[in-house]
Length: 202
Image 1 (tube, helix red, strand yellow):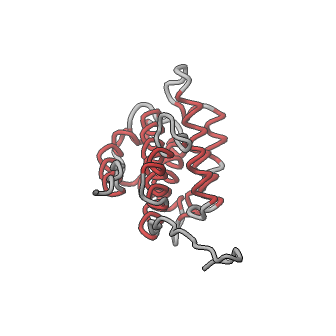
Image 2: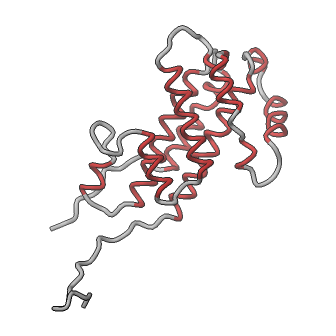
């Protein structure tokens, strides 16, 4: 009997390709809300992808990650387990949770046309540091390069540094999770342990 195939989650190549399709419109659009919602959707898929590869193949693993009624259906629970398995660092977990907190704050409010104009959102963004994910250079240098080649509408965005800081950390985390996924090996199911009459393993 053939083994049941896992439901296919978005691969990291799929995620990055779709991200590139959306990036210009999200970064330069009149509101930062689409940017927040789409990035978090991508990150939720990315964390689930990592966990799916770290779990044994089977229906139990699949049901755990079911977004509707799975025990690991929530973003927070997935991040917690990824951290406990040693797949992500303390910093990764903290930033993922901060991005999710921002998403939850703005997704339930229709009063603000520009989420990054909110003081509470800006305070959370101040705690995001894209520099920690860079092997060289700095985020300030990257921002100057981005501004130099950006179309005129970039200058009309209210406080673009907050929008770009959010996006910078989100993109970095997608790349980090891609690397984690690549180096993670799917375990095999545990073999039965036989015992000797005295109770010791055979």
